[in-house]
Length: 185
Length: 298
Image 1 (tube, helix red, strand yellow):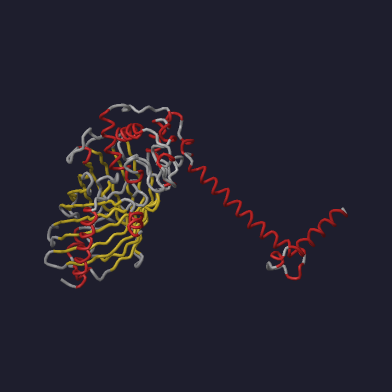
Image 2 (image 1 turned 90 degrees about the horizontal axis):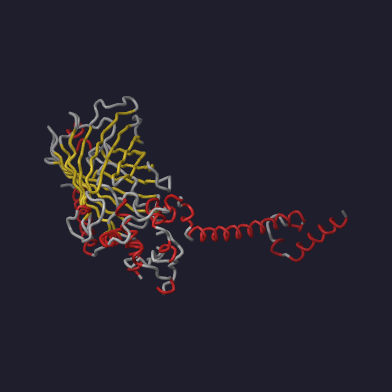
């Protein structure tokens, strides 16, 4: 018990003497231990806030890291593009891509500004069903609109076209700020 | 022509000039919006894109002067789930005058971020228009052809500030879009009852897949639809009585790398309605408007 009291006293004395910023806090007048501890809690709260912001930032990064893939139901994930490999579908898909997708993702599909590349490994290795699910639902929280109003065959045509472009790594494009992992096409 | 008429004309000229500049710079993209003039679907403006539309109406109501109404709309996508839109309206009545009738500001929110069989969208609008407004962006309460018998000078001083709320429900299936709007409006100035209206619509592209070769008049560039809209009375007298109702087939042509053009004759279904409302619209979507402006200013 005595040891505990001594520890508390030493702890209070330590912060009173060696921590001028704490002593300057409001409510720390006279250097009363209780006031000092109020100041300490304020700094602690600030530190906790910084940590919380850092954690939140990390979570946002993780969320932008293709997290939508986790939400794709298995039944949708397994869907196969009925138009895959058909030359007519590719040509038509290219036209739809130019009309609807190129404005954000660029005519070469390598992304534009903060809009991600569609030739990243993540997109190119995603199943047809996963991309179809993304086109249908969008990622509204991150700026990707839903394309459910586009008829289903047109969506498959676009997927066939995008898949035909093949992967290009972000380092190969030599552009910064264009994360190939940030799949919110 | 009075000062306001002159201002309206100058504004229209400037908008047309802006249109011409934008079209010449080739910034057009096509949204996936259905061809409706009154009904809203769940289609939101893509984030960062600005759509400028001109909607015109021509009508020759029985026992009233024919008129032309013009509405210019600026629709901007703030977020994937949030679209904001600003409207300016005016009209010209034959043997009468040309006047600016007011403005509207609306916001649409999509509360569910995933696609469902029925997608709800919440719509809130503030209107500041006078009673000479003939934009027919919706038909509410007991609006009827009798409102058009009064001259602009008589109704223009009556300013209406109102709040309009809509519940938009929309489905997309097998290439079809089916949309239902339930509308209510409350005048903020006077202690008038709540007014009600509705709009129902269905549309489909003429082709569900894109052809191998691009062509100007390809079927996939056209979308056809049908709208049914009208008033539903007020809280005091809810129902179809003394309301105007319209059935309107429409078609939209998305010009490749150009604007979208829409046309719709709206046929009045009862004696309270105008015989035919001839509607026309041109809309042009500019991709990433502020990004472009930023890059140009650098």
